[in-house]
Length: 322
Ligand SMILES: [Zn+2]
Image 1 (cartoon, rainbow, N blue to C red):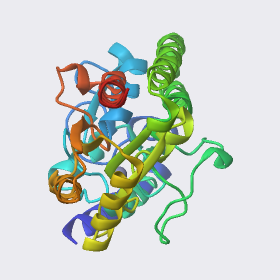
Image 2: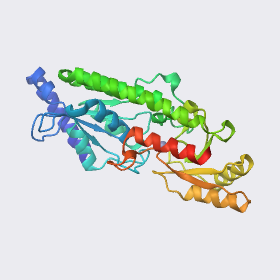
Image 3: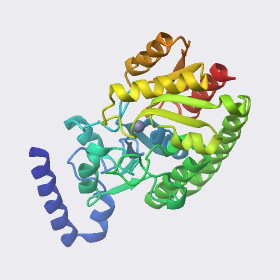
């Protein structure tokens, strides 16, 4: 509550300033908190960008290069569906000139904060420009679309384009660099898309079944012709019950599926229950490995980048199922 009233008074302050010195202050007051240095810029003059997830931050870092300083709110293993912004997170959002988030209700608990912030600064959902006909419906009734769009690499290129276009608009002095770095990044994503396609083709079509704990892989399945079977709904906030466990266990036995996968941002126990259940019915299923779903790996490791995370997943899946 304290934050809300503070933000409201900051907003009023900004409105007052606008009336006095319009253009200059518009440029300087990209943010609203009273830290030192130009608003929304680092001390060495770089555009301050804050992104909710690592996948989005990766695009901002690669396309922004040396002209941006990117802060990520959600680190390795963090579940965006359940994430609540702390006071420290609010400060990271506050000082940024540009905030990127996933949208489509990915950051369910942060939406109000982000909407409020959009009145003061550039706050962009990277899924905003994705053609709606390319989006999958959400499984839960409260949401319209499935937010896990980064698992269709070709579709995710639209998010990268949105990041590029926003940086160009916000910082036109460095537009050429953003265009050039954007083109290079998009080329990388194009190659990544082809890599994923090729690896999935190594698995015989009838065995191309991905069993995971939550339905994060719908886009992956559609893009790369993989049947995806999840244990629970689109959001990890949804509960799963004993019936889901036994249904999935029976499916594994009937389809003779050899491996299931656990996820970095989900407890492994649900999948372990399935493996134990299948064993009781005399069918051996193993855990094929850990997949990254809603968060990337540790920074400084290959899985700490978007491309590394995707490669890790498809390599893990291909090795376990082919
Ligand atoms: Zn998810």
